[in-house]
Length: 473
Length: 94
Image 1: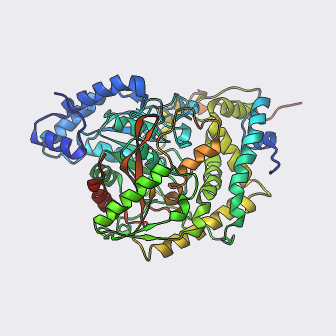
Image 2: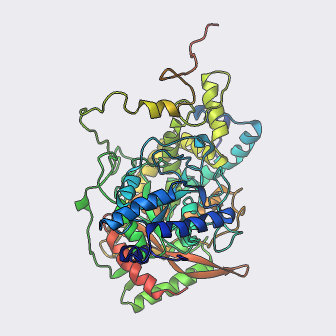
Image 3: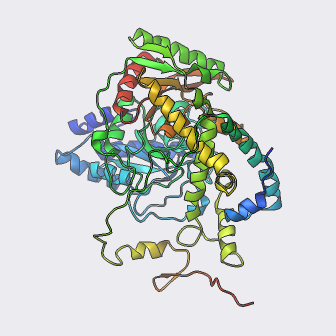
């Protein structure tokens, strides 16, 4: 039986009705994953125990204990630890690193009997917006193989878009779930900071990182999020369940049009404006909002994130785990290991972070960035007294060509202009397909982003479902 | 444009760099710093506040049994002997 293009809901129904088994489902997705991975390079590894996992799921189903994710084929970003499996973070420095425990989110998936198909390609340590910074080759966009899938969770996005998994986990520090979701015509959800435990997830920018979900529909992204959400004492930023507000209704959408003046493709803005009109037709009210300090968000982000990354990545020294390159003495071991083990973008960000934290510059850069971040938060909170949600395009362009931006770091960073704000705020953000634009004769997907107040994750799913119902293509 | 001593930064960050890499980084890092420099014109007073983040400590109790994670940790080490991590001698005689 050919099983493809299924949503979690559809597959769950087939499984619990007994029309198919989890092994049937796994075989279909596994075969396609193996076939398509040759050209797409979404997976760094397709696991050898997928059918065993499916058999466990079938037992859970036969026992009548199936939950939504039981037997569902899911792809896992390679910076999330799975006990006994390599977790490389897309880096050469961890090419031989075998995880000794499960991340919290993996414990959750295993408890439901979800089937992990493999670990997906990513920009090294989640630094990038295209997967071109992976030490293991670029992932291709399933909609156009000459173009990037976005990043850093580009492998997870491409895996779902090419039907090599039904849903996927990614991580989002500055847009790394939402931007690839937009470029691969998926729904991508970054939860409230603290909603999902980061226990067992490689740290990039610890005040920004969050694990989230990819799905073909809003309902799928929601189902996967609800499964991994939960309070966990092993992540000190984990929030209690009662922090989250269910059922806040969204009627008023704020649009910060001052952001759209430069660096955004005209047809992306036009499609965005048409989408807002469609939302008006659904009864939503659209108002202009001012977030004056938010124009500095990208600059603030590219100070705070490298600062945190440079400290977080100090642990990769070749001594306790990972690759070790011998130098002439201990200091040289560190220097050579990190030279050989890290790619160009990671080294660049470590140096940037080291600079903005260094004596004499920390006040002007790092501490000033924290102050501006707090100012952005205050403005956002004020705006949210008046509107329920903020809407922007997810990314300023559709998928760009492989190689187009690799030699220009600032052009690559500009991809994050609309997404970093949610991470700076700790707020939830969702990207939903909003149609396609044409480049070189190819129809390329773009996304609509909604951001709301911390703890109102569920309201993004509500507006998301309304939105996907009215947007065609 | 900001003057940045890339060789010194790389040393602080414990990353060896070749002369060619220094040359590239001497162009790229100041470009990025010039871009982020725009925050100097933004509002927001530098204070001692750290925002929403603070250290959360747990009670020092309920330790796990000694050695139950030792094998995985030793297996992950690039260089080990008899259950110990082996590192280079750091004190040398001139």
